[in-house]
Length: 313
Image 1 (cartoon, rainbow, N blue to C red):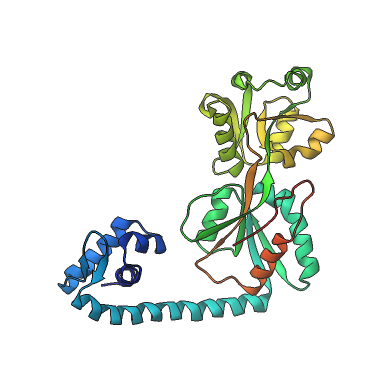
Image 2: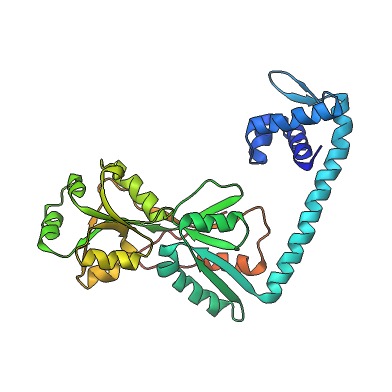
């Protein structure tokens, strides 16, 4: 037998349900059933008495539960001891590690980090920039304390907190052809299929959201004439301004170029009020004192033109 089997056994016993136990353990119900079945085979005993409404312990199950509960509690105690040890080490260093995708890293975090250094003098931070998929992987692997991402991937133990609404828009060079499109204000985006398109890289939250919004507007992203996939959005903006193609980026990222007249932006019809930029952390690990302080600062940070900054959870 192993700890996973005993954890499943304890959760089924305490919840009275295989499906509830599966949710609590972030497993599928067949996996929980397999753990219990393997345990029963190893012990050559029937552990539960099942009927259509409930699951109850057999006499052998009651005996096992007394031991299994102690083992699972001891496992949690070991985890807590080492979690506290890690927290003390982190606090001693006064450093928080942050992973962020491009948009929050370049346009939202500078404001947050400025407040962090002002309100927490002496505390340090380490920032790693990646795409959204990379940020979430670092959170899952517990390589960073918190992350910022423009998309949500359903990964075990990840807790997402939306704190900013980011609107995407089609960006185009500021020439007469595209000025006329903006003046017309049509909701028909079929003209996109005649344009060269520059996309963000695979794994980018902006790209995932773009694909979703274009589909909602009646354009299949697979039909676009894609000439390049580029990770660096500054390169994308310069390429668009020089007439290489058009793209879809965050309005936040394009603001400066639009104000200077280098680019034009066109809203995506049928788009909602924007995608969420999320703070994410691994709820399976204890947050350090510094990380808790940092999250509180994000909670209280306001951004110009954006009121969606409430954090709960």
